[in-house]
Length: 220
Image (cartoon, rainbow, N blue to C red):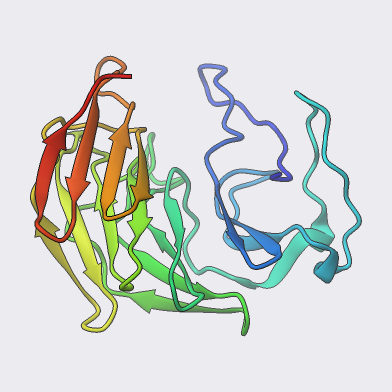
């Protein structure tokens, strides 16, 4: 579970879900988002960190413990970003919104890599389009695919990260621009579900990375 404290925005909407948890080995890292403040650290909830915790009851709010904060912090505060565990053990943190910039925050194209073993952050090449509320999938070959999101409007664009060249390139766009969706790798396909634009979507779209093609699927 994620140790967070519920905060609300100006409309009263809960903001507790705007960080991204990533599980690696027996540890679970919470990267960025909102707790008692906007976090730039990787929070760690594990016995290895000397923290005793229990699973909370349904609906229970669990405050973030100061001892759960790793000493290494990202240089960029962000929320509504994504994180993905790469095959080499690094965790990629991509996009999101930098808070406290203007009235709505600043959409980001920046990308960082976190090494949980050495507790070190690295800067990777930025995405070509700033985006938040997107979805990210790490492929077995080490490449990372980022789908859609929001930047002025819902996005259909897809970007693929090549870790060997440290570059991003565009792939065939999604048939439907969307934000707040999910992307799930199943075999050689990536299934995109839900999300929306000005309304919620029930449509499902399937991407084949190897051929850079899209398949239509049944609705939710």
